[in-house]
Length: 324
Image 1 (tube, rainbow, N blue to C red):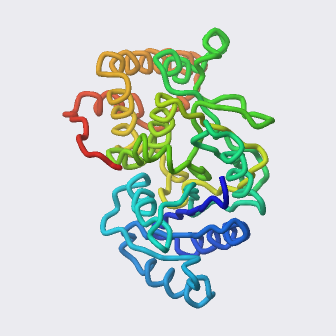
Image 2: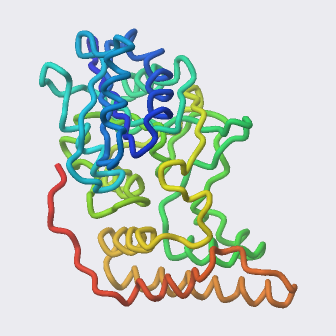
């Protein structure tokens, strides 16, 4: 591929200064790759859009279409916000060859974006390439995963050594790879997507407000014959949960349960979704029994099983919208 065109999409929600820090890190790579950056303000409802436009202009980033700031009219969540950026295309209206999505609290090392681009160029069947992610303390984050399954739901909820050994191949979090390799799916904090793959399978499913949208996209890609890679040469620092506030929440938000249910029903059907729910509840009860006998509190968030069951029995309808 001669001179592939690259578009970076950076989604902001009420964190303009951190978004600018992420943009600055991305711009260490983008100009040399012939890339452009579009910052999407996801209907923050504060002064984020004005701050971002003012700073981008003041820093000279807006010249020649290098950086654009656009506003989403509504906050439809992570996938919907990134879809706004995808649809913005390059500044001349052309489609890019690759789209790179970067969280507002993620900061690529120099060369990180180039490593993802080079990997996709070198591997024509690779539709998705994701970075090695670490915290500010240097500790590797768990971002390489297997697809969720009935067995994986039970193992993850039970958290008991004997089951974890028997069901090791179903564990959703993988041992984090020491070398570049294919994975089922990876986190969207730093993810590059091949445009021709998106043209085939569609963009993010906007039914997901937050969580499971990357899993769904990677599963659709796999079913269409595309590969997802975890690229250890691409390294990114990620703070995590800044926009959502999840680090401070002791109870899972309702959209996590809604997204989980939608993922299973959409991709595997209601019977399988019911089996996955039952496996998770059974594993969770075994975990609670073990914790109770040991005089310890369960490791789940507050009200987790109750909320999981409550959401399972609320009305549900698959989205008929085409996000492409």
